[in-house]
Image (cartoon, rainbow over all chains, first blue to last red; front, side, top):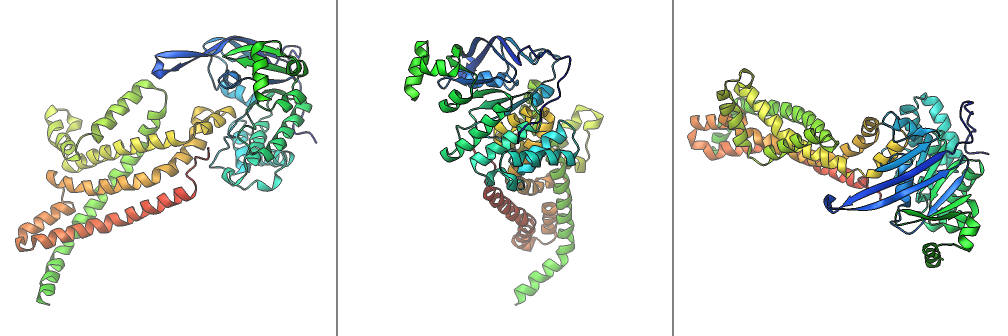
Length: 264
Length: 230
């Protein structure tokens, strides 16, 4: 059974255009109270096609999470341009709140609303943001909870669930907005080992259903199996990218070689 | 035995008088607590927003009122401000009491609300915004309900301080509990010690439930694990 329902196609939409276009994006973080700064992203350009699954890997501090967070505007950018499904997200006239409903985000630490039950976590954004009727929102939420494999926990609070279960709810919450694409920011890094595979399976299923995905992860097995393309980042730059098998078997750059040696 | 009869007579003759004072203490403190909490909550929220000028103004106000004794504040508001010859700054003693005590309360509430909002993990707001909620929607549905729970224990201890601070209002002629007691002492100078004891007991009876409540609320918040799960 599919997790997502197929979206109705807008006839005016140019389906050849990429879902995401990242053009010369730079992001500077000030540290030491503004005295010095580091470049978290240096002139990054890339594209993500419709239905494409892109896995971003790299050492910590390489800017991969920053890049992911710029795609739904959680992180601003200092230079460059990001266009998502034809919408320039840097333009002042773009409504970021609408954009964010179209770009689902899953966090490392789940970030479920602690003051709401699982069901409410999924219902609230639908009623508040999409203005759905409560009954409809609950139906959507129950269906999603069933599809992510925890139909019996709807009245539990997040703290009563295991990490893996919380992450499933978080994925369901993002899917309830019917996003055009999903961002996963180290979605399995904070999980107990035995719950990782369940969440990864869910992500694989989403990928099979044609969801456009950008995934920051340390799960190299997942990257190899699911990714259409692997992007390797280091020190705020895209160092190398390519098909997963080619990248993992014979990385071209020294930095990627060193990185892969260290983690395997 | 004779001592008890003697003291009972003191209590008997003073109790309507002291009760009147306690009632006024109750009214002034409650009005100030309510007004101060509303003002402080709004200012506390303002302090967490990105508007730099209002934030600086609120910060200045908080420092000013928390960094000076309440006695000095009430002197300035009741005796100094009227000399500026601005009509709406000429308070009668009751208004001066409410205004000063509310501002005093609000300065503490502002700080409490601000730190409670900041104590809610950042991920909560990021998650809310990622679902497409506006800043205001995220505050209303997600952040404030969680922050509110954290404010309850410190709020209760501030309320106790505010109740006790009403004793200072005797200097501007508000006939609250302490003032009533002092008047009673003028009538019965032989029982000074005993009357002060009565006053202390009455304050305690008013404050103790609040302290108990603070302790209970604190244990409740702790039992729920606050909300920091990270």
